[in-house]
Image (cartoon, rainbow, N blue to C red; front, side):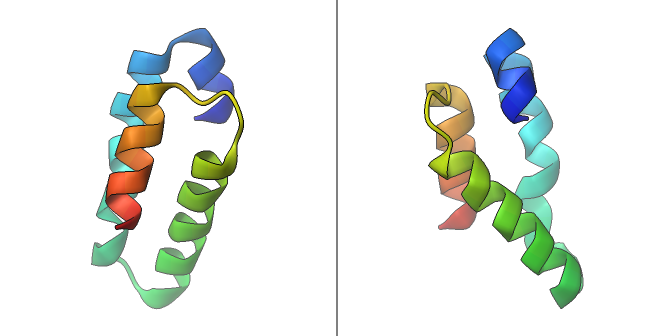
Length: 59
């Protein structure tokens, strides 16, 4: 998503929807998905769309 954000932020925010369902998975996968969402949030230069989807899913 980080690389795609530079090319097309709208597509990146839509594809990020797959990670927003992290609560449906087992604890090992939840941990991995949350860590990647956190990584996306902490990345400088992230578009508003991607940042909003990632932060809302972490809340």
